[in-house]
Length: 348
Image (cartoon, rainbow, N blue to C red; front, side, top):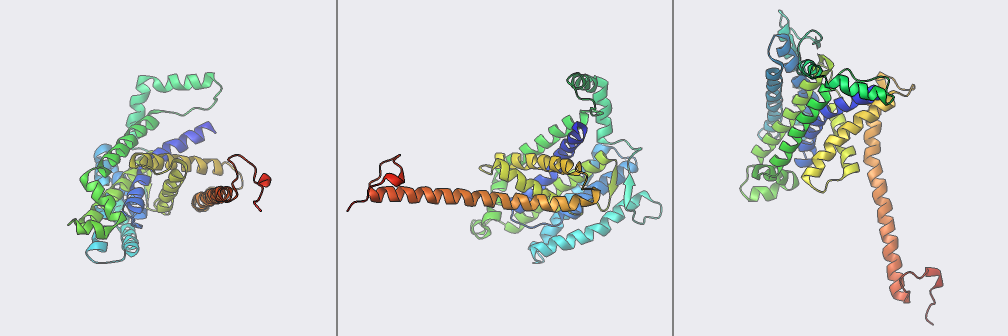
C-alpha cells in the first residue's frame, strides 16, 4: 500500500504541472481549451521520439515544451483571428493533433508511418539519470533502511524521482505566481475576467489569449513529456480524458484549500493533483474496480468535487439566514443576547 501511494504522489506531482496549465485556461482566461488532450500526447511523443533517436533527454523535454506552446498558440489563432468558437477551436486542434502525434512518433520508423506506442525501456531518460545519481549518493539506502526499521516492509526503488519532481514543480509554481503578478500576467487575468474593460485600456486581448493558451499547453506538453519518461513509453491514446483529470485536480484543490490569492490557488492546484492521484490509487485497491474503470472513477470524483462545495455553501447560507432571522426577531421583541427564544415575553 505504501509503495502504491508513493507512486501516486510521484505521478501527482508530475500531473500537477498539467493541472497548472489547465488552471491558466479554465480559471485565468475562462477559456474551455480541449487542446489539452492532444498537446499532452504531443509532449510525450516529441520527447520519446527524440530520446529514441539519440538526443539528450533534457533537450528532448525542452523541444516538447515548444511543440506544446505552438499547439496552444494555433488554438488561440483559430479563436481570435479566424473567429472560431473557443470550444470548437480546441476540439479541432485536438483532432488535428492526433494525426500530428502519429506523424511525430513515425519518425522512429524508416517508413515514416505513424506508430501508436514508443517504448523507452532501453533508453536513458531524465529519471533514470537521476536515479543513478541519487543511488550513488547512498540516500536511497539510508531512507529505505529507516523505513524498514519502523515497520515498512516494502519501500520504493528510488527517491530521486520524487525529489526531482518536487523541485521542478515548485519552480514552475513560483514562476507562474511571479508571471501572474507581472503587467502581462495582470492583463491576462483581466482578459479572463472582463475582456471589454481590458480592451478599453488599449490592450490587445487577442495576443493575450494566444499567449495564455500557448503557455498553458506548454505546461501540459511538459507534463506529457515527463510522464512518458516516467512510464518508460509514449502512447498516442494517453491524452484521452486528460482535460477531465486536470479539471478534477483544479476543482479538488480549490474546494479544499480555497482561492483567496494567486499563490494559494496555484498551491491548491498542485495539492489537488496529488490528492486526486492518491484517491484514484486507493479506489483501484478495491476489488470491485479494475483498470477499465479509471475514467468512470475520474468522472465520479469530478462530480463529487463539483457538488459537495455547493452543498456545504447552501448549508452555510441557511445557517447565516437563520442567524440573521434570530437577530431580527430579538430586536423586535427586546430579547437580550443569549436569552432563549422560548423565554421571550411578548409585549401586550
